[in-house]
Length: 160
Length: 221
Image 1 (tube, chains in turn red, blue):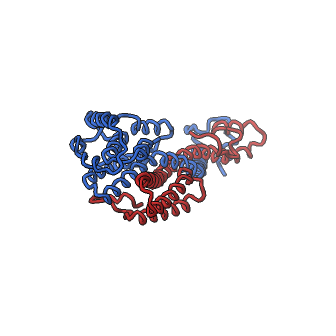
Image 2: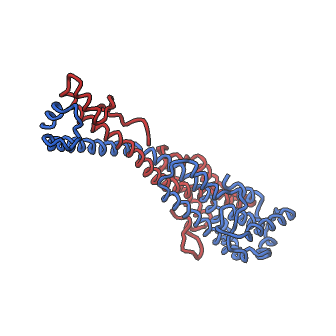
Image 3: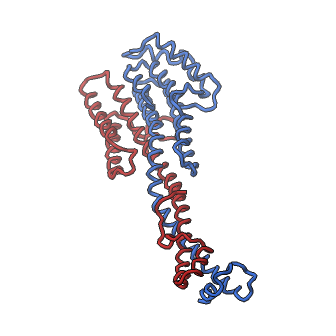
């Protein structure tokens, strides 16, 4: 169970049910203590619920997060692999037409390298991803490749 | 508030003792009131704990998912680039091989996703690392079922027609034998290591540059 957080005001004396009753019996402000017992029970429940909720939350959040991260990782990785490969493939030809292609590829690679795709707290994650997608489309167009070009299979590998 | 009186008058006794007749009903009231408070507290606690932990879990999971999948993505992108290049340059005989490798990568991605979706209790990084080791790239892994597709010589014409063949013949032989060793060991499932070997072999056969070879060899590191 997770620890930390989830403190409850009535929890501070740490008394259980019978403990609460015993305390009520022996102290002068018995009545107050009994009324406080309600708060204590709420507190005990809260504490237990908080630990359980934290666990559920982490597990659930992690599952959603990992699927989301996997999707973006796969997409960004694919663009990078694609661009680096084409960069190699064009490397040997240095005519003007290819240098334009290479330039666009370089730009895409630069964008991806700078993109902290694995950081969910990066505030421009979606914004940068859109830009990368746009650049990738430009790359495909300049290379004369359809972005869902995969031949004779059902999977359109480059569309996300 | 009858239970209060009961509690005051009988507080030295165990008020849960349901044999004590005269206070039986009052006890029940007390018990149910306290149970209710306990339950309410529990409910409030669950909500509070969950709300706070969801984002934290999401962030952890996101990183793991992204890091796990980026390698698969790079393989897919690389193979797609090779596919489009072969298509544009008339190396049609390599297309089915590349498509097969893409299928293997696709299955691998599906496996990773299934794994991420199913392991709700995975709370340790160790689990993830074990899993990554399963898809370990440094392993000369068991291979696919495609021995026939990689028969020696199948792409020889491609190699010889390559305009800028940079390959080293001595290296070629060892790659060839390594490759066949990899694919003919008894397979369970093709791994990314296998895909990588196959891609290296393909790059050799297509007579592509050393840059290209280097790029493929870097995948996953």
